[in-house]
Image (tube, rainbow, N blue to C red; front, side, top):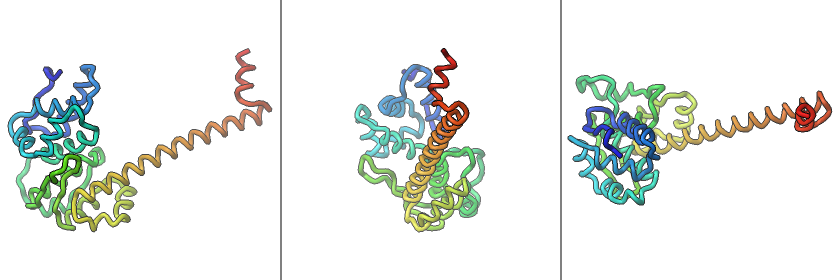
Amino acid sequence: MFRNIEQFDGSIPASRWLARLSFDLKKGGYIASPEQILEAVEILLEGDAPTWLDSSRVFHEVVDERNEATENDVEMLKEAFIAEFPPRTVKKLEGNVQQEIRTLKQLPEETLLAYNGTAKHLLKRAYGRDEPVLHLRKRFKHFVTPGKVSAFVEGLFGAELRSLVIRRSTMSCSSLLAAHKITQGIKSGMESQREVEARLANEKEYLDLKSLVYQKFGRNASEVLVSWLA
């Protein structure tokens, strides 16, 4: 199954490798199930990557019990994986980390998960402390200062999302994890609202069209269509 899929050694962002993995699995006729993804993670990691995986009992349990894994288990591991091996557009010296935190911005094409990984990487460089909780289906607890959470929130792409997140008092969160969780919930709510609005708009357009046909022909649209096809 994984014969033609490249191994991961940490030299590229984890998000890119995971995207390729999903693509290659689907191209090979597989469904990229949680079990297949977790099996790939166990088999295809090399270099420093297996050390990272071996350091967490939580992830070992997820991988070892992959036949019972859920989508949430995979998302938990993906988030930590991406945070550990985040995207880096350019190589540069460490420089002024605090300045980078103050100017932290989410790119238009950057997913919320990848942006969270970038923020976590800055946290680690600023000597923040990340510790996994020892429960299988819980995520990471991040110990951060309020300034780093504020930078994360203020750097969110999209004025509407950023405004809604600020209104939820997210800047007062004691952890990057909590801020990310609230932001993800608000973002999902916005997407659901847009889907509902689009559906209602389509329904209104359909009803308006039916009304227009009735006004013009004095009959229901279905009756007019039948007469045209007769």
